[in-house]
Image 1 (tube, rainbow, N blue to C red):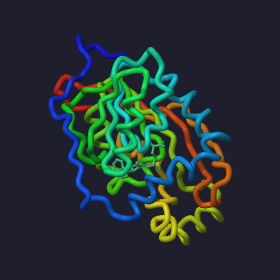
Image 2: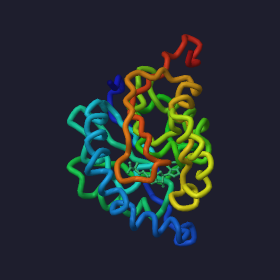
Image 3: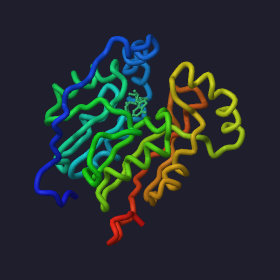
Image 4: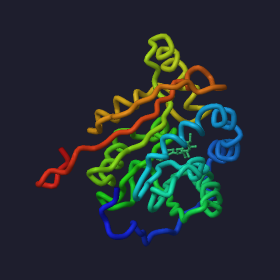
Length: 236
Ligand SMILES: C[S@@+](CC[C@H](N)C(=O)[O-])C[C@H]1O[C@@H](n2cnc3c(N)ncnc32)[C@H](O)[C@@H]1O
């Protein structure tokens, strides 16, 4: 929970939108995203997201917010919601969804690898189907850790590398195709990466994404905390 007197406020709310930034894949992906995910959302993801985000509290940062699928899941325990998204096409949809949300939402254009916030700004960081697609997962996780307060939590729902060796091999073989079609990696051991970045992973649930190709079916949902700051100012 936040110890700061006021929720974070940012003086750089202008979103840079440039047609030149919008590749055709990005435009089509953003336009079709909600339809593409509708079955998986209805059958599994919305329920998981609602349960996961019921735990979000204080000042919340969501990275890679996409079209804003998580916005409806934040409860009154949340004091402020800030959502970042690097992709201009997604950002347009996210802004529209944020405008109709039942609470103020700050939307910023930024990649998770370079978050435009001071250290120790948020109580909760949310990552939903994002760590599969960031360019540099360890750098993104370092940034998440940096902007989290010392008692803060990372809440994540991600599709990941399978624990089953046969499927993991298929994910390795078809990763190029997944990257081409969906724009993310289907074979990342994201929970290991979260631990490697210095988080302690708490609750962890394993699920199977319905109505999806086998290589993107393994889904994990969990929470992670980062150790307290030492008197010298470094995280342990
Ligand atoms: C599969 S979508 C998930 C969207 C949303 N979080 C959800 O749960 O529906 C992945 C999102 O991550 C965004 N993304 C891609 N690279 C990113 C990066 N480096 N940092 C943050 N977000 C990124 C994409 O633009 C896209 O909006």
